[in-house]
Length: 355
Image 1 (cartoon, rainbow, N blue to C red):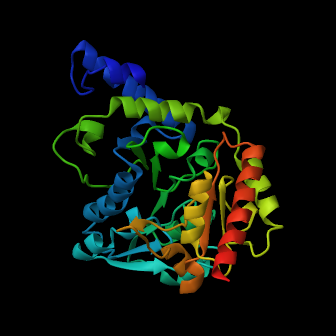
Image 2: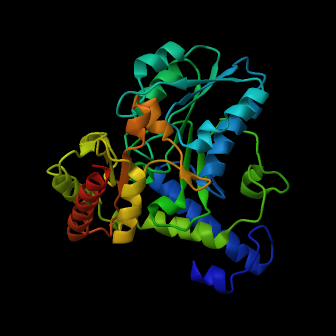
């Protein structure tokens, strides 16, 4: 990225030499991403974030197909807010949005999805992997079911790009990504659009990205995205560190995992200590040098209840106990053991305060 931040100021839409250099850099990044996904060069567009990409997939499809006599959109109850929060706009466009129920591990219930599907459904949106629990969703089964009813299928794969780039096929009709989840820069996303699928742009004003996303391209960010995708094969799996962490926690009194390891992302661990709220745990862990999350967004200085845990059937009290830990390829076994010891120490301390 450095040359494009330092002196590569050419506009990728310009015809002069510096513009052509920038355009070539963007195209090279697109080739890396499309090559990793095994899709056509023209089927991938760059956006400003994974959120923007998901908005384009869902709302763009709704805008482009208003005359298709399909008036319903189905989204899983545990989607990221970039999908869930499209509901008011979809309803203003005349669509009815139904939530697909999930099981205790935040996995889509296929029986419920089949009951909800019909010839009036335009789009089904189910993420590839949940960002809180790490739960892997049955995307192949969802794709087959949506196809049977003639509905489009979008999957938010922000958490799962390494899997898709390593040969998990076929892709849904619409798939959205973000660079920062694979070690790339923040502020760059991408969308895969199967050839023939109709979308209308949400950002207008220029002809960039095949007239689907106006605005001067973030050349440095896109180059960084491509570099991160190209380096995926060299990145070690975070699973050994995650497993080492969970092995230690398995012997800590009260630790209750939310999802089985085999059914979740290799870098995710989610669970709770019954009777211990997440907020004091997170504060204590942060002071100890361990960055963790509750699986809930921070709003106005307070933790909002996790919609994922609520949808999975947890009580209000249980939702306040949820803890999320994530691991990267740089995390060592020693790091994991140290982190687990911090969690055990924090749980004992907070439990002692409460008692």
